[in-house]
Length: 404
Image (cartoon, rainbow, N blue to C red; front, side, top):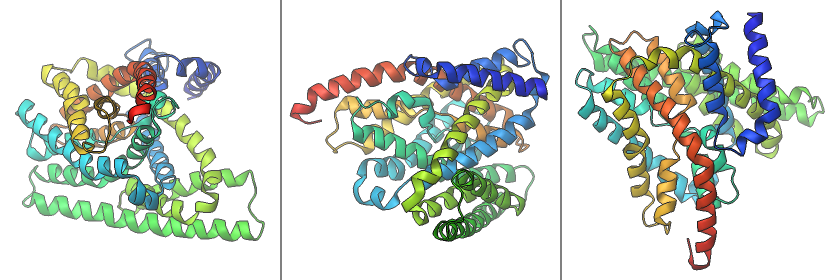
């Protein structure tokens, strides 16, 4: 345990010292930490045996996603989104369902042995995007602001939207194994996950926002401890919903949306520390992903798996985006750029961990497809983010005299 702590902390320290250099290159943080995990894990030099424990990855990944869901949802302004942000609204309301549908069609053509619900499950698991893999895009001021904002808002909300859909298909897929009524079983699991998750998340978010407002008004809130409140609230919502038989992820996402609206005057101040902790947890999750999931999966990739992964990152993502943002005055490069930069990351990893432990007959195949897609995304989106963002921004500025 202490060896693992020392190794992870030392590498995180080393990375933090050179993070600025890494961020200006074609290499991304997830690439570095995934490679590090693969190198020191059981399929590399096997320096720390603890890294082979899938439960360690499961626990860290779940907590990381819960915190990220809460903070991303809290920082979203739904009133502005609905009123003025037509671009991210189209990506979420139209692009996301089309991506899942197209992913389902690709799976139907490539995988003969999977059930219809399992194919839908894969498509949903790989629909959410992760802005952390495209930091060079969403933080590059050269890229047009509307494009950066659309991709950032989309990635902040689509993982939370996909959570209940994923659990629905997981329940339906699980119900096909010997259950007399798979539809009834799947829907009952879905209702419990969503209903309990919503109730717990909304109730705790309302109570937490009220306590923070009361404490701030009476001068009880400590500047130091105020940095802990959002983190504690996110984990309370997640753990509370899970313990009651609901979805902690839905609780974190729904609670974050409500908390962000109720705590709006002081939202940015409260979220700062939580977002930093979430970024740290994310990089540690990438390390365990490289150690626990990438090594075993590398030997199990077949032609259909690799082809589906490539289609998921290209046609399945790009075509819906290009279609739904047509007619909005965006150049073809803008539409292709937005379509390409839909990297798969943390949410897909957590979904894969959940499916791996679900006992599905074809769970290993589903996990392998997701791992292959995420791994290719880490590399391909990581190496293309900075060069294309810089070139795209320069060309967009050159075109700005005559419109977008």
